[in-house]
Length: 525
Image (cartoon, rainbow, N blue to C red; front, side, top):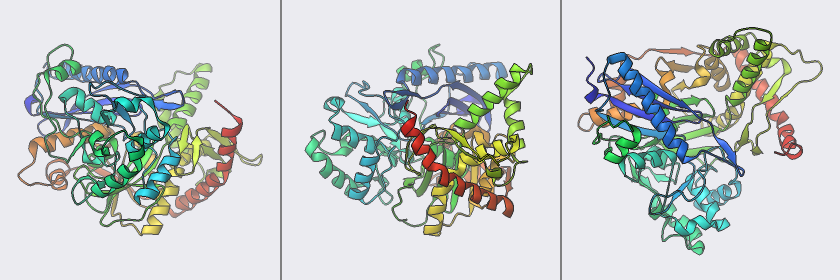
């Protein structure tokens, strides 16, 4: 009989889906819930409404609650611990009464290039465009009116945590994407705060930027308790009881590391879905790269993050088009089965995709200096057009931009990564996306059996760590002991021919990028 008072809940607001996962007292997944959503381009800003955040969270939890009732005949009232996470970083400003002051600016926006360069040069630390402080600095330079009422900024994970607990805190992993963190103090870097404050002083928005940042917490620290108002917000039916302890809210980068047990030095995790990013836990400082962020694990170890904004969105669009054509011919199509068959077909394609090149940019890309998205497919008249090469080109395109940044980091830093573990929707068809990734990285890639649970599973494990850890037990030790000791995984390595083919494809992809930039010029929104 499941003891639901010892269960743990993780909720994650991903780019295309809000998902909840409930783990039993043995930390096995027993129920899940979901809510589909999509970002919108509003006045040139990629955003989501906070009303939809609240609606999606409630719908997701209601779905999970129904699942528990159907499977176990139990109405969920008491949970041992919980945590929330969300898509990384971005910008959400509020006044003192928790009123939203401006549109939520997500990680997908590429409109802060000038501020990113200026801050990176001034701080001597790479500040990516999507980081909260980069958006804040842009708003200050532009004199945006909302800054007159600004009390604090947070991320979507911090916002949701605040709704449920009343606490303005953030996990160290997510916090390190708001403002740089000092690994010695495991807090926002005091010296860099002084440098930023000197830049910000002429704008008169605050005394110090630390006043508008949330308090940072590490994994295992208590981040507050579910309030009566939070319980009613999450479960309007009124069954869920307040008082549940919450883990620090994290970003999807941190939860991905936890979900793949990649929080020790020399481990790396790949998240491959709407975007693609890799986090490699470091043993030493690295140089400043315009394509590499330095963030933290949820326990406070430094991490190199390599990220590409675009991954599977264009693949999804093409699969939907193929399904529409099949349905026009009278076929009954199961979309999930179609994805599986098309992904498998890609493995029949030539390693270099036979001369085809696709660019699946739906939004801009910091790695390649592209400001907007214009998806395209190119070929010469002599290029054979067949389904296998077409699908393989799109799978290779999904990881090509990431590969460019990854190769730059690994070659320059001689980075040591003993094990790479991947998770995300790109891997749903066993052995296909994993093989493409292996060819791109020229390395073994592992996939855990639990990889399909993804970020909310990682967030639930952070809640479990809060509840279960022994005195002084580190997060890596807890995961090894209590969660992954008997974990099953699949590891493969692409052939030399596949690696050479991926290198050739990536070179062709880079050569075609001027077409993308010209398309932005001639095809206006």
